[in-house]
Amino acid sequence: MSTSVHTSEIRVRLKEVAYDHVYFGTVFTWFEVGRGDLSRAAGAPYAELEERNLGSFVVSAAAHYRRPIPPTGIVRLETRLARMTRSRFVFAYSLYAANHSDPAVVGSTEHVMADLAGRPCRIPAEFSGAFTPTGEPVEPVRLAGPERANWRHRLRVRYEETDAFRVVYNGNYFAWMEAAWSGRLAGGPWDIALNMQRGRAFGVLRTACRYIAPARYDDEVEIEVGAAPVGWTRVQLDYRFASGKTGETLAFGRTLHAVTEGGRVVAVPRDLLECLGLTPPESTRSTPTRRGELTPRGEPVG
Image 1 (tube, rainbow, N blue to C red):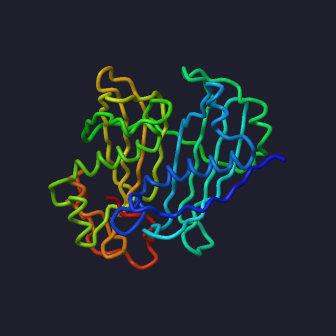
Image 2 (image 1 turned 90 degrees about the vertical axis):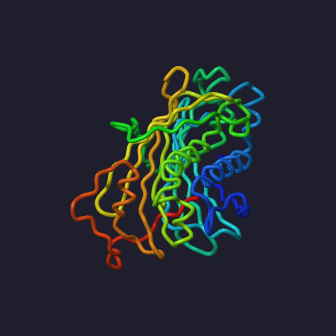
Image 3 (image 1 turned 30 degrees about the vertical axis):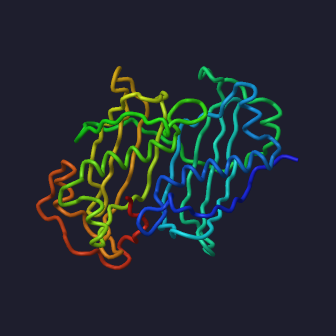
């Protein structure tokens, strides 16, 4: 009998926590757990694909954070196969914390079936036949990088950041986004760690990544970051990941942020805008927003 939905229970681990909440990039590892559980429940485990020298490669991933996830306890992850074509399929996810009936995070990943050389191929019949897609709509990830770079961040791929296919694991690009903005702000008036201690957070509301080409162990990667204000209370960061050696584009990313002080959303402070390479408007508000104007749905990041 074909399967389309599976619910997993996951216990939060200490390494997945940043300050008093689950780190925003952790959910992409949990998404992998969910689709692995769904595939096993359907009788089509990923390991059987690997035995045929095939892989299910992530081509895009996205998440919308509605509230922070507590740093301990059990979370429930509902994984659904939303859509399937001859060589591609899309999963949708809903992540529930504690006894909440509405999800704390919703997300999606799109995959392409390919051989180990990266050539797309048809999904094996016994794999596709094990699932019945739900048919639910999933918004596609359309990213093209920043229009201009406000700053650049360079790093070298560590061995632990690669996966079984010897390329950088898809979830690590979200940690690289955080490295790019926390590195930019480090040591200044908006140092992430110092501001967390003062009750101020640069929280993530949404994030997405579109993967173009693989990065491998010991590669140098340059991240171009473009920043833009979104109204008074949000900032959008767009990323282009490129090979430090050839300049080839590896991926495009995006994070949408809000600033909270004492748990309440506030207008983006002038000094934070300046640290991000932005020119503050003449009349930037510095007082908290009115209750109900914008609920603090982001999560602080470490």
